[in-house]
Length: 405
Image (cartoon, rainbow, N blue to C red; front, side, top):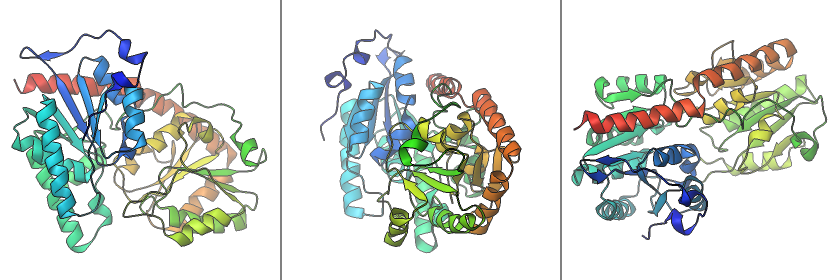
């Protein structure tokens, strides 16, 4: 596979004069690997922060427009390597060989692989080549929505990926707790930066304010809007949200459901029947993929993420920074993104009636919604600004080099 160089794609960003970080007399090369180019969305800002700190950064994922866009936006090198999300022994063997070839070419000082397939193959390759500093970033546990043999395979895959790494970075408090329970890695090997999150939230971009989204979508001022932002999949709880919305409409007939996101082709893809319901429903507005979601949060009264599993949901932080109260589940990762009864509400996963009850509670109490929105904004600014979160990431990688000297 041919590497993508930001120097061929960017003009202004590549002209920045940087002081390269060195270790033992050599430039520090950092490879960040993920399975799908869609995961590049959670790396926004992080790769650039590391580059500006002096690391020579290469991002690796399956080929796709989001990989190409990330290379441009972050000013880093990119390396497309096809990787299949599901279990595919022959395809996985080829991907492993491609990753080994990439590592031999780049000769990284540090590798940081994450997401199940890239986490396993990338860490195996880095361990086999004895990359001196190896990180496995745990962004969630796919096994939580699996059963039987598949669950066991995913569990052992997580354990093997973690074993090949020197450190396992966990995206949230509850994810680290779950990793300890499942013996993914020894507790001493599991690390958490600050309060969690991949890259925090841009508190200037995501902020309370006016929006023309309602008008553009034909939603009248004063009509309540429930929002969802993210991949439209079963594991995100979209079927339960759709069922709950029908009940909510009976109580609040002028309510709208705003779905901001795309149909993902992963194993938990939304079935065709649900897609048809969304397309034909008179009170649902579906945008598809949106590059800049900030204005859409401002059109919402309440954001709902009825997810089954998470690492740490960025959408909840974005809604919070926008002054929007959030309803999400008690699932791993999700429960760390809300202060219950302060910035939003936590509900059990997979129960449409719980979504309905929580949504009606907030829709019927304007004062509570306002207080929660204000508290959410203050909490996001204090704990999850991208400046703070990305600063902790840079400190970690610098310290990681010194710790292993």
